[in-house]
Length: 590
Figure 1 (cartoon, rainbow, N blue to C red):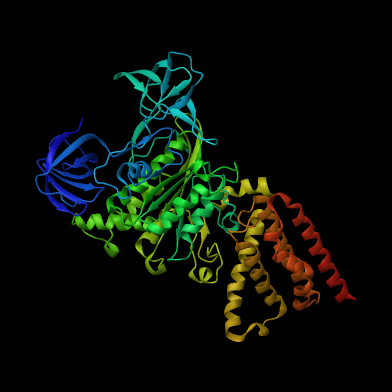
Figure 2 (cartoon, rainbow, N blue to C red):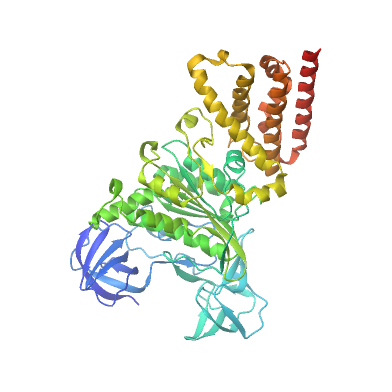
């Protein structure tokens, strides 16, 4: 039961100074004023406290009561999370809409998970009494067609399971098990709370050796990310950060997607909310929302809720990881989150660091990305959380603090290029500025699933792209005609690689997703063209004649004409290319 722990002394936007504080703790969830605005204690000093609130403070005045809850800001974890749209502090927006209309009333209290819905619980094969600890599986609930929701013993709890409910339908607040612990008997339901700022414990952090396959060729082939990895996608306005995250959310082989719209523009978030339910999951043929959780915290919502939203999202992701799922978190965008930190820090009159951001900005960024990883859970399963964070540097300046600090704590960097975006080359990921530090870790997986030449082929095409940059500088000075055919052919091959491989059409039924096998064979065709073509030029064949080959046009169009399940066509295209070059060499030799 809430109790009065003090009163309002001063109101400064979303930051409230409180006095007369007694019996309160750091990071305690509080409710302020008669309308019970949700807040969190972020600073304690004697009987004084600083509270950041997650709603508009208009109308609050000195002397208003502050109620303590005795618990930290937490999320509810249990069946019903999948397919739900929450705000930054896990309030279900559709339920709030039903209760208050189009505008969210302050102080409105709606349970995060539906209390009146019954779920079919199937108990696990446990012999009573059973000694269990945190992370153990009590039973399962089929939440969606793809997600079998495992009901876990909350982390930190241990004891003897003395009672387990029979198979049947249960609401979230009805007990399904009883455990005898050191604190006495505790009833367990289908759900449990967890503080958002506290990482959920695991048994062991495992090496990152399995790639997160996204179906985007520039990512999977050139700059791959491992399951459990961390990625930054920086780019100026209009370079395609959100669309890149949408493509990854739809096509990557993660089993659960948590999409956090953190301070994004309302119209962009509206697109996500209306588009995601219509998208079809290619693996099941059903709605993508059956494996997705959306957190919508737009730029006109309270700034402090924006600060909390990414912790809410990553906590939900850790919960599904603990059930043995691979989860991908899309944070769009962490720059808006950092701006929320800056505003709250300024209102608390803290000493600013570079560009006005608080001195603890790097620490907060590190804490967020460190919650990613491939883990062995407390229950013995394996699961992962991959974090893909968009960064929106003002003016596309990658030297600003948020981008620079993020680069220190992530191992994969997909820099978006304004010139590529203006040329309608999407995904606009720059092959010159981007990098991935997961290459060595995941190369054995690629060797096993795609052949032992993958790493060598990737290195060869990257070296060609580097050579092309230097040749383009010469071309700008003296024109292409001053170069010999052997060097002009490098430019030709790189142009082919950019247009036929790196550029990908998200609206084309065939090109929007490329399987691992298709990517490997497409890259092999382009490198065969390079190796055989450069040999032919040394034998006297002209670049003009190489361009005139009919198979050259077939290679340009292969991404649209060859489906993922029909990659044998690419083998035929390789043979056709070999024969065409053989004919040219024979003609010039004669």
